[in-house]
Length: 127
Image (spheres, one colour):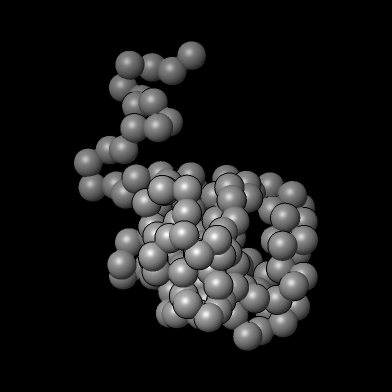
């Protein structure tokens, strides 16, 4: 039970960013295991509890590593998306650069990663 003064979890207070937008973007593309995870661990406290951090990595081990790190550290892997290297667009090729194929809103322009391939892992800080 929540008190009347506590907003629902999906409501954004004035001055806050929406909970589905990453508050920090890390670009670890071109770096191999364990560097992407070390960068994620180093920067997870850069975002407030409940907010997202986006890690871009092209290391084939990153998917398993990020999922395992989240389980071990108690954070939540919210999702993953792929950007094709050749065009800079989503891997399906159906979305323009900076947009996701499922119609979801892309990250803010200031947080957009540089062109290139790789996967984006969205991690929600839990504690």
